[in-house]
Amino acid sequence: MALDPEQLARLQRAYEVLGLPQTASAQQVKQAYRKLTKRWHPDLYSPGSFEQKEATLMMKVINDAYDFVSGAPLNDCDPRVAAPEAERVRQPYVQPPRPIIFRHDRDAPPPKLDLFGFWVRFFFGAIFGLLCGFNAIARGVVESIPLAILVGLAEVVIFGLLSGFLGDKFWIDFFRR
Image (cartoon, rainbow, N blue to C red; front, side, top):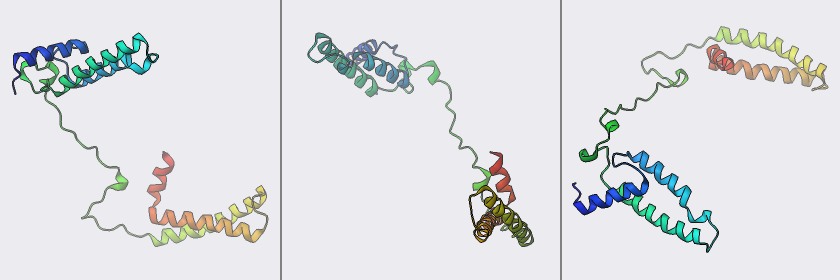
């Protein structure tokens, strides 16, 4: 889509209003527009003042220039005003690999359940839970022995089940973070 001479002159004036060369990229145009908007926005001035009226007129000119430039052929695609950085080859987006915890190999056999390890952890955990329960009594958190034993066993059962189902590698990685 070629521009006629009148549109080319208008495009040149629009770039001058924005304070940019005609080889500016779309991102540079947007940055210049935002900078001018921060400088000339009418809300920055007291209502009814000369400065506000001047800012209103300037914003109309800036908005018209931005609308015309953003609607014009992109510099990246327009051979007439191609920017040097537009000539380089754009690299395709490559999605980073997913974390190991979310990977799933459909051909891999299901993980083996280590029942012996689960029960060993469970019983040693029960002993540890009893000790934790008595520690809770010593700290004054729990006042009765049966409640302390129940709290300690509950902690161990929950940790044992999570450990058995999620595996030791999960917890090692979890506590390394």
